[in-house]
Length: 285
Ligand SMILES: [Zn+2]
Image 1 (tube, rainbow, N blue to C red):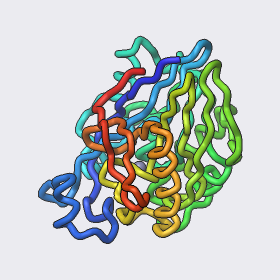
Image 2: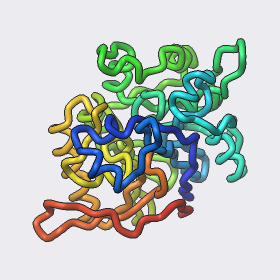
Image 3: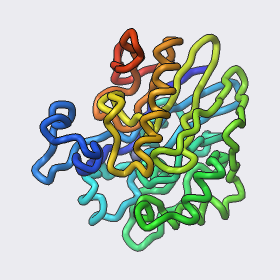
């Protein structure tokens, strides 16, 4: 089993929206804002290669957005960076056997679509992969509420359904892939049915926290996003996951951190505050 960090395209979101009710004087020390108050973020995926399986966890935003939306979201790499990252590891999209999607928001699943081309609808990539999505996450993507409708990609949901390769997961499902076992820490605070894959192999543990803890700044318990549907619930879920990682020394993988892919977590004696330690920009296990 080998595990790699594989960057998809970078983008920008409004700093205020990403830090909920935290004042700018607090958050701009962590991530500086541009002239439009946007902060630069990564969209990072994981690549796990076992005996028979080539797995991705999330696909990032990719490059499917049209030029107007790409400009709005600061997607300034025109290439499909996830495909490029895979190629650097010697894989094509056809080699990928499974993709575990934490949820179906555009900045996590957009990378399943081909790069934007004038006059052509983006196509679903990864022709040999199963797409793993939680039942609750699929349900929310099919019936979003006005507050989160803009975060889903209707075209993508239709193409996934039509592929016949959608696998719906229940919260307690455990997926075995050769020597890798994937369990799920399920969180409803950001969006119902968010899956945080908990990867275990050979005494190692890496949890991909997705938008439960999107980067090091959000390791602070009270820091939540304006996009979170249930911020108080999210804080409780975050505390449970951080305690578990601080206790067993597992690694936390970040989807949107602008600089770091993983860290470990340190707790103070009372388990009230948590800090990211041993941060790494990229990794290869
Ligand atoms: Zn996100």
